[in-house]
Amino acid sequence: MPKSDIVSLRVLLLGMSLASVLAGSAAAFDIKSGVTKESGPFDLFKFGFKAYKNGQKEDAVEAYRYAAEKGHTGSRWALANMYAYGDGVAKDDFEAFKIYNEIAAQGVEPGSEDTGFFINALLSLANYYRRGIPGSPIKPDLSQARQLYFQVASTFGVAEAQFQLAKMMLSGEGGGANIQQAKKWLNQARRNGHPGAMAVFGNVLFQEGQTVRGLAFMTAALDKCVPKDCVWMQQLQEQAFSVAGEEDRRGAVALSQQFAQGAE
Image (cartoon, rainbow, N blue to C red; front, side):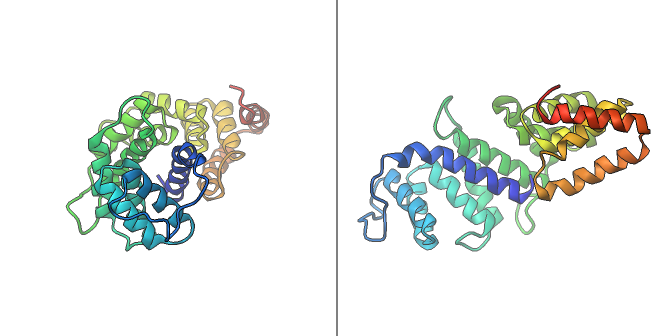
């Protein structure tokens, strides 16, 4: 997963998980709030979150550490992200990996408010296993990465995991190549609103000879992509567009408008 996608995901997950937590807090915590390392993990977590939002990242790190030591999953996750991005602390991917791994090993009960943290930890671990962490014991393990993507894709239906799993299946990373299974996951991911999956799904169809439909999906993806991803999607679409016939191009453009609006 690209870094900016992970950042967006972690912000979204944190917002969802904290919405109900902070809704009832009339007064924000501050340095004089009376919260200490002996406070309960929930109070430390809220203090850490408020400190972070106020730019007091050193205080946030300290609060998250104390809460994490007391088993608070949200604090562990927040702390891991700060290490992963060098946000308020020195960047340390191996330290982030260890904390994500603790969250993953802890597991999650069905319907738990910690589910978002658990999912994000699994995705982060998958990304680390996919590329490894230089200077650490964590070496690239494509099989483990593929297994983690599969777990998140199948159990939680997360589009990004479905997309990454499909790409590994297409290229044979971490296991045998399987185009039909890759198409299944790409189709699910694009139905879940993933522009990248829509573009790659369209390219696969195009390569299989479904010229109009494939080109239409690639074209529709350009209406949904974020700027950083639009570059590679546009290159994919333009390459296909350049070899398609004029009639197929017109048909694809018309069909893409339907796809962009959610029609099949």
